[in-house]
Image 1 (cartoon, helix red, strand yellow):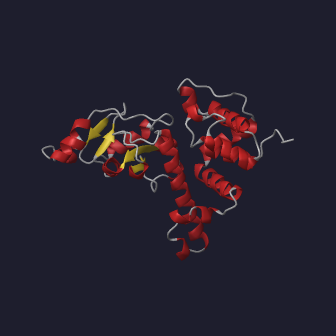
Image 2 (cartoon, one colour):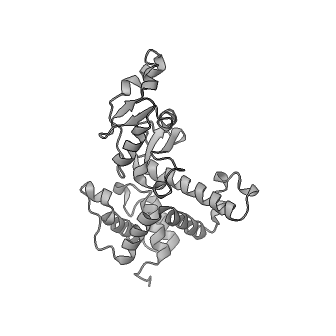
Image 3 (cartoon, helix red, strand yellow):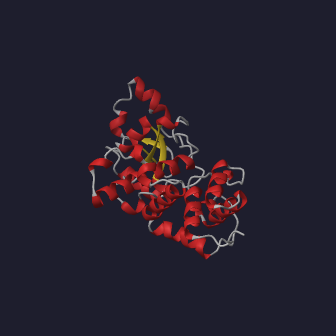
Length: 256
């Protein structure tokens, strides 16, 4: 009989999946939940219940009036606390454990995302792998939160979508993997956001920089920017962009 107590590895894998699963898809019929259940030797119902336990601890879920299944237990609560304190370490650990359960190594699993790996050694190699793996996970997490749609246009082609950081990756290590530090944007708006040509106000409405408005007579401006000024972004199902982070971004808006 399966031990009812979840191991740390199992909890870490459940949390990994939780961060990539929409609340409404936390069901025992979800193929990804079934897959994880098979890997760790538990039932889909047990995995679904554990993800619901995690949801009960998520302040974002609770703020939306949802509850999940309470009484998650201290071990499950500790995983959530650990994520808040050191997201990078826990995310990378979860991906490493997942690779092991899949009969692979993290370097083999992510070889397509690690083009420079063969040229690196030692600590430099380790940092590179961790950074690329975590960046890849951040993308998956943000796309999940935004239902794989651009927050400006609703474009839903994954090939065109980017998980845009509000505070750039290099500027704040603690917030790199914070779901509230990401917005799903298609390539054009990601570039405009990154260059501080556009931003969003405290009500999540698009604002344009003076620099961008200098091109107001151009057709591309009218079609892709002007008519969207003041439009509210398509909000995520989980992890609203931090107003604190957006305020910092607006402060750097070119000539705004």
